[in-house]
Image (tube, rainbow, N blue to C red; front, side, top):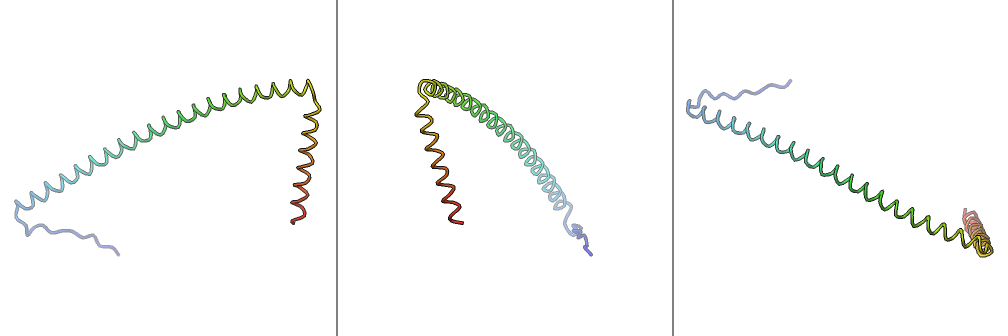
Length: 111
């Protein structure tokens, strides 16, 4: 069973008891100010992280749009090349199919 411990200050002079009271009150004020400062800092940090995340998302969206435009241009050029002469594309696809078959067969043999 836990006992609460009380401090008996009766053996101190009134002046000493007043000093203790003032020191405890000062410590309580300091603790309150520290708590308020930490809360303010925490709110500021959350705001900064939110801004950083928003900026990051904006930049990622922009870079994604740039990449999509570049891929679109390349796909358009590739499509035109295939329409002009489909033989190199067919040869590349057959070569890729052979490579995939060899890799898959190699993986099956190891098991």
